[in-house]
Length: 493
Image (cartoon, rainbow, N blue to C red; front, side, top):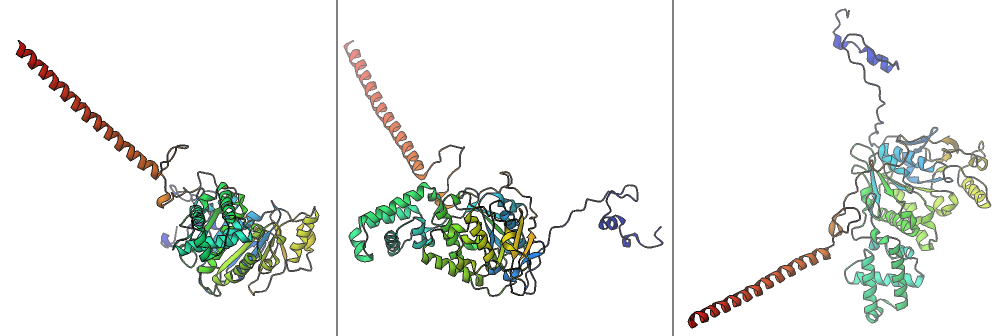
């Protein structure tokens, strides 16, 4: 009985019980369908407004304030202490807050982010994702000199090579261009010296050997004329995707990290490109782009003073472009103190003090974080379990939050690298370098091979025509001789 109340206005008792947490199938009339199992809806990102108090959760109540995320950050800890999971948790948090991210996947485990975020895979070599190749011209002579491990005199000659290319209205984009410019300098040595400055054939030969060494590391595939555009890291709408979430750009770096100089050149060139081209953004409730740079110590290894000053300037000023940088390494001592001083958000995982170097790393970690009278940071760092961390961030008021010990929250995505069947297909290369794929191990035809095939076919047809021509003439002469012989025989008869 419903006492005259229309049934459409009555609450569904199944919904009431499901909302109250009562399980089981509920039937209150014959023929009713059982309710579908309850599934928690995915988090809905808040719209991008100037009034939102956006927070990127870390775990245990700790968070990074979106307004101060561009004060950069530092994630440190021993191998196996949980840095990768922390990075994934932060990348998901930024994604849900509408911030696009760039993460360096050193081991392949960060590919799991594709299970919970709109992910895009990149690869400098173009094997495991979209092409993120570099250009010597965009890197500049200073970075290329460091990449080739050149001396000061050889670096000066490299600048002359760049000047030769610019004087001819061209640019050095890939390794073939660099070899060609070296040949031009060698073949026109006197005129080049008169115009650009002195260099020696020995210096040119040393640069050529350095380029050859780079090629043997597989770097020929890492450079091309159409270099990677850093602006593709941003989402199309205020840095986010059209659904309000940020785009997660995952750089497959397992092969790239085998050449530390090549890796550091790519990362520094990427930061420089963003800094040079991005517009001033002012104060925002959250950054437009967050970059997580794993193995950050490689950027500063054997770094000349001029290049270190350049990196320091980028880190100091790129925050005004709406970009947040998070360096990931084992110890704060791996990063120059002038850079560490600009990293406001700190997450310190466990370190083990076994050797004197380990103890120095722990002391450097303690000195780099704000003190908390109730926490003996030096003792706690050595006892932190996997997934635990000491956290100090810039709070909503703009002041550092007191150091606290927390357990980092797990990301929503299932952990573990993507299986080959889960990975998106790698797009085919475009332009003149595109090839036709065949069976595994089958040689791929080049442009020269195709031309030679056409020439071979033409020669065969020509030879066949010539044979047919001479065969026709020979057959005609033989027929004529037979006719003459027959006529002579008839005349005698």
